[in-house]
Length: 222
Image (cartoon, rainbow, N blue to C red; front, side, top):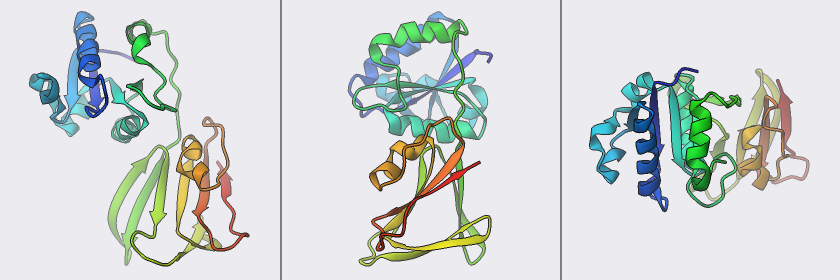
């Protein structure tokens, strides 16, 4: 992977965000790497000149560094998927299942990255299309999961489930979690789904509070 320019996706609601972001920018500048900040978040640390619109941001960067927690990394992954850009996750406190680089190891980890001492961990992602009367309404990309919920509806909902156009089951439940192996330890696990090795390309379909005991999760391996 060539490394000439780096993009930052930042959650400024986290503690120490401003200080850590400035540390990373200083380090990248010292290594003579171009730096961009996605959107207009640079104004939070007085670096508005580094702001870059999302579309241009994705065309310009070789690597994305996400600063925050798992939620920030998931957002960065959705952005990166369109251009197949690697993501480097920095955890700014709290639980971090996906963001394993801590503040104390920051410069050391960045130096290893700059020297090429790393490996890429490829993860399967989901593509979701919402249709109404055969018309496409919305399209999503997800690293963890896609959730179909009942919203404010007071009763359970019935969800006819098909795999490759073959009918499987109709779930009567509060909703449905469709997750990747990476997302198996997130919402799917809380809903009773299995834990799956994240390097296995699979899809887990887990009902949320199903009405019948026979309505169990499905595990689909590629």
